[in-house]
Structures are given as structure tokens and as C-alpha cells.
Image 1: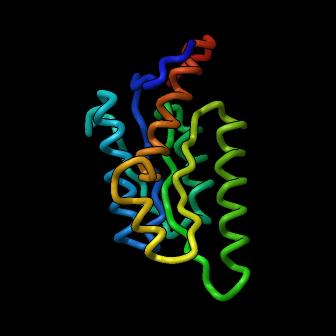
Image 2 (image 1 turned 135 degrees about the horizontal axis):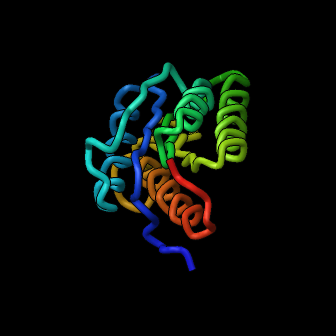
Image 3 (image 1 turned 60 degrees about the vertical axis):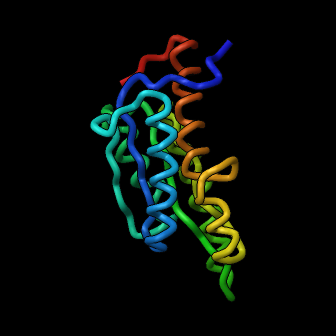
Length: 155
């Protein structure tokens, strides 16, 4: 049975869309805290900033194919506006990140907020059960542990 806490072996990347800088910083803090709780040191984490959620799949692909990282936490925020832009960005970010992990076998956590307003975004970045930065890091750690148990090599 997989270790519920996951495995912290290796180096980890955090790719973050910084369109909403304050939210990005909060998401990164949540991910860092979760990695730290699992024994991952700051020197074993690299942070890559991209313009927004739409660019996260490519950033995750760069990290996953580099052979340097055991997992990638993908973080960002998309807040609904008055146009269909929200639907396209959310859909393509999710599809792209999923594609990267399926193609490469490197776990990519989906920590992209898809919310109606800033209040909802803040509620999902401030620590606790709904902290999406921490949840994305936790997912990466758990899937990395499963990969190891299944005999798949890690970088």
C-alpha cells in the first residue's frame, strides 16, 4: 500500500502563474510548507514563474522532461470574468497539465484555482484543508511514492 504521506525523495519544481501576484505567493507558500513537512529542503525545490495559468503546461513539460525533478506542483489562479476566456484558460491548463504527467510519468499536481471571485481565491490559499498550493504538493508527493512502489525509476 502506498505511503499516505507520499515520498519526498528527489528534487521538486513549483511552476506558478503569477498573473495574480498575491495569490501566487500564497500558493507557493502552501506548497513549500507541504514539501517541508515531508522533509524536502528549500535547496531541493526550484520555483519557476510564468505569466499565467495558460503557460503552466509548457513550464511543467520543461521541468518534467529535464530529468531533474521527481514531481512538479503547478499553481495559479483563474478568476471568472465577463467573457468566455475563463473557460478556455481553465480547460486548457487542466488538460495540458494532465497531458504532461501522462506523457512523462512525472507527477504534476494541479493547484490552479478556478474560482468566481477573489474571496473564493483567498479562502483556498490561506492554509488549512482547502489550501490548493499544499494540496498540489501533497498530490505530487503521494504519486511520487506510488511511482516508486510500482518500480518506476525517479530522476
